[in-house]
Length: 207
Length: 152
Image 1 (tube, rainbow over the protein chains, first blue to last red):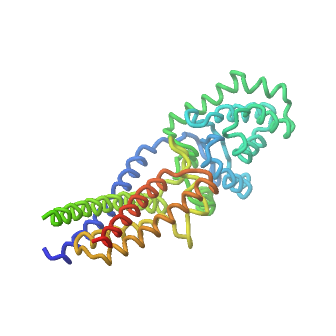
Image 2: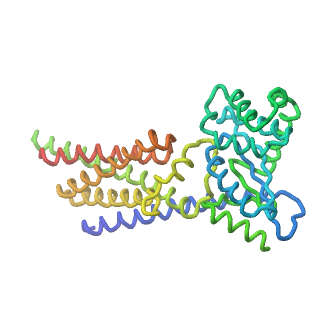
Image 3: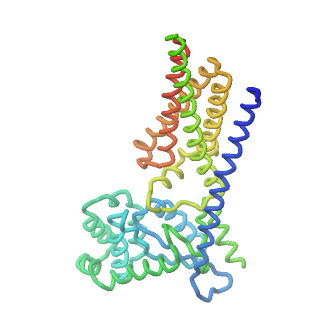
């Protein structure tokens, strides 16, 4: 084999190698999507989009999606129903479970969404803190939540059970990472941008 | 005779270095191909068992002229693969120079990306670290090859 031929065959090998990597990636993706058949049952109204988000307050990716989801809700208003479900990744996020409980304790005083926003906006402040509970209490008080009741609710079984139930539901729906979104019951691939997300919701409303 | 043996030893070691660089280039190619494909057709960012990647890969620093850096990385590793193959086959010193030049540029970029991850984005991405590892090995091997070439 001449030297030029040798070089040529190496370049061919390189091309095959790149294609093989792409192929492996595609097969992996197809297999993981095949397992995504789980759906949330329900009667969905025409002209309305129901978005369910399984998320973890301490997850950076959820933090990245927070402003997008907030903007979607503002844009679509009543046409989009948003449900937030807890899926705390306890093994890698030490304060995720407590944060989920803090939001549920806030719900008991009618301030879930205010607390939800607070937790995401201040994510970097409390994520690795050893004083997460005092930070959460301070956030709660700043949005007008009663401190004593909040402290008791965070530790209550009602709140703990709610978070656990969400987590178990998520496992049942084969949620394996956060955030995971279900649009009108069907799991969707996380959109790459606001416009992509908006289009998905709009298409659902137009259906 | 000793000289001949020395020459043989150097040549053999050079071969091994070149093979090592080829393997590292393939590692880099697999890594950047995955990231590029994921960028264009990916399943979106998620927090799984290992995190940090999603923060790094969605940061504004992950793109240049709206093209993911991984794509440039892919081009770099393909160039290294071709250059190293050429050095292996033609045994040309000029190619050694080109490898050193490309390897140095790649290595400096990798260091800059490490700086961005540690001090600016404050999150580490395993794929970027893999690329740092392979570009460092390529750079190191490139320096050794070039110096040997000059000594010969």
